[in-house]
Image (tube, rainbow, N blue to C red; front, side):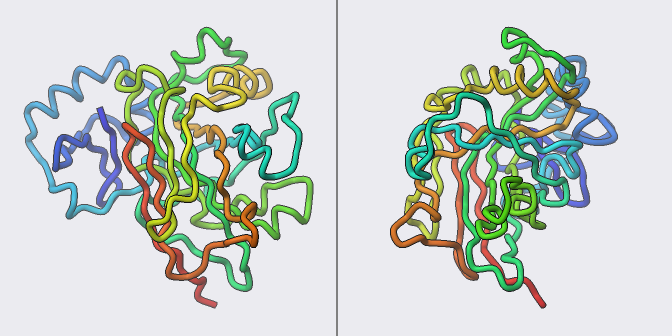
Length: 279
């Protein structure tokens, strides 16, 4: 099922060219994901009944999770991206956080902060935690993922490179677009076999497959949950492939008016305009 937030924060399911409202099924998406195994059949029945539906194309889609408790992202996790940065393959996972205020809808404008000229794109598979937990084993990790969506780890490179800590350069407002919906895990037999692309103004900049992850998703969940409790609605950005603007010669950063599209087979696409911050 494709679970979506739309309108004024309502929860629905995408069915063909429409959204069927899942009225009363949960107080929010994180709650629905936490109890998804018990509520999946009720949601399916609501979709079949389709008591209230709206056209998909005429409806504004919101970020599937409005304010995730955690947005965790792994860096240097595709071999070609590691090579283009001139670094060696990491022996250990490299993690950083994006702040919840960076979350943005799948088609909402992405803001270039005032005075910044080095904003970059990073197409990523995003895993959404359903059942929370601590010290989750690699073998049990799939049972803790509710579903998947597209993500763009938008990065302000000059801020990122000022410090060994990337959090500020990764957390500008609107710099964590996710969506367009959460495709539940039962519809994705293998998250490590998905084609992923990023296009800027129609030009393909990134093109790879999640089978090329250095540390796969199950290892990622086992690693971070050894340190912290994962909770329903937490987002895990799993890494970006080669082709980022920073690594081009000369570098090609995003500018106002550019359109950035992130596509992952089976999960849909994000597409948004870059806009300058209103000083």
